[in-house]
Image 1: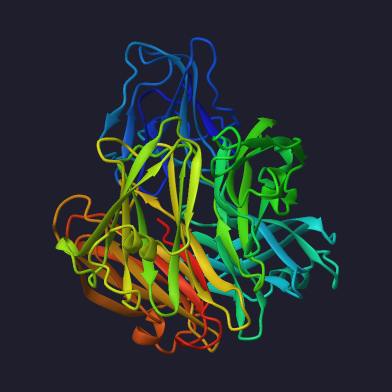
Image 2: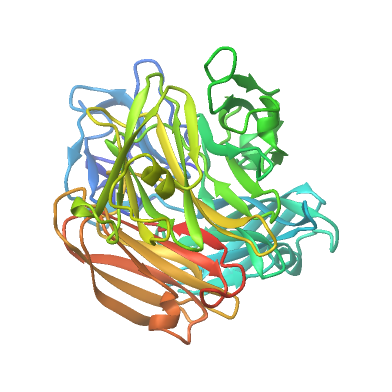
Length: 611
């Protein structure tokens, strides 16, 4: 839904301002003769001689200081609009007075003197897949869904399910009280209980759109999904959040593998609403390594896929499209027709255990000089695989700096550089051992345990076009591996004050760990943190951990955080606040299978924080 208000004429007399606050709310203020100014949908797209300005604020207010209507600032019918992703636009014909001013925004409210209109309606989150279905190696996958409402009011939930297989598309409704978090162990059964016409048995799966009505801001609601299968020792699987709106620009899925150990599937979806219609996507599969005889990676463009709103489609073992001897690669996804957003993801499954690692799409380049992987592990039970890809047009040399307290080197840092030619991807199965074998000092013997962060940069250059991710795994008792994948975070994109982490559990089958990394981007200061723990069943804050100090470039991991600080809490969410220090930080959680280390599979589901 796009909201707009035509400005000028009888609606607004003068002194109009438009602002976005740090939570993504959009406001318009001014003096008006009538509070009932017209409101109609508008498509914020540029036209000949017109302007379109996008208002985005990160951490502070951004105000458009302009006088709209018949003025020097704009001429003709001007409008403001907000789209489903929280982007705010101003459209119209630009005059000489048009300008952008950064600063605070203090609207005045009063009859016939001033007004403020808030441009936020409902939060719509798109879940790319929920299912109840058989898989390879006698696996049976189900989706657990966690719904979070951290606001101070009850919200209405509307579900729109679009079946990919098994039938049963439809809508259903429910409510979620203020401050509560609901963990539903089987999403398909839950939707059936609400009256969704999904068959009772058989393989069933599809996309799910969740609309929250009644939130004050779009950051107060969240959806978290864990899809997995039972194995001999417990359960394995992967996690992913509901996404806001979807994608319109081309995206990439890196780190895809195809071998006797792993297989990779890619899924695509139309994330739009019924009114936005169908879209057509084009997928191109690239080998990740030089291929004989050209010495350069090869690529194959697949037949185009057309999807109706909500439709899901999966391409199994996609790397086989390039050739039988290509064991790693990546995929580019492009929308070539239609106006609805799309979504795409990949899953790397272990050929023996069927455990999956979720690969999120990457769009564009964040302007930055470095990438950060918050945790890399080498221990007797866990190791981290590194994926590096260079989709830029130039060859690069990537410097790796692994920082951990146990490293016997200056600043507890092991350093190594690796050449990465244009369009190539490298997969290093045990990055700590690889660095040790290639000359990095301070890493000790193979029996030494190291847990820390990996910082990636390009000396005398930038990381444009680079991608990095890690997959941390442990051996399964019946063979194969259990693990979790997570992508790097660009420097400059990390939060500096507060974040939330949703969907955590502490019970007989699960434990949740918290990770906090001081990125050290600003200076050498130590960060101090406070963590507030909320019980998802009551909505109440049940504990606070204060005075957590972390030196620059250091990682703090708190295992079983609810058991440590609020042992009666079975599921909940966290508020992380930096109370002192100048450096940005990365916060994440891992939900592990098993109430304590060593129990069940130990498989993890990785969750980054949310604003």
